[in-house]
Length: 93
Image 1 (tube, helix red, strand yellow):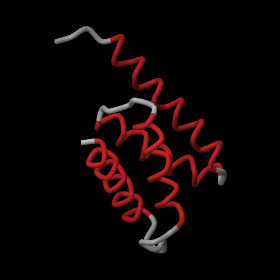
Image 2: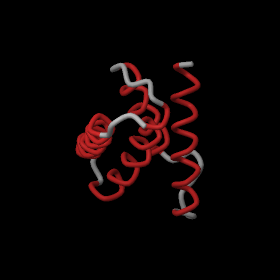
Image 3: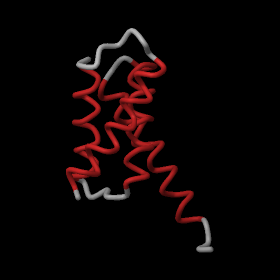
Image 4: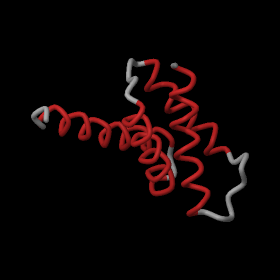
């Protein structure tokens, strides 16, 4: 499941990214950077597929905005933390 979660989250984010950025090649370096980022989250223990998707999309957005892998990772991690925090604050329905 680990590989499937990583592949699925990356595929979702990359497919949507390509829809918004028609001039980007399928083999752009951002795609491999995305995979490394999502794999690092999974290696750190994050296994929620929905959260991996959110983090993947946020990473690509921040990478475009900040033009720096490390800054994009930190910004996406912050977004992921906020998502986790809001999930914990919601009562189970």
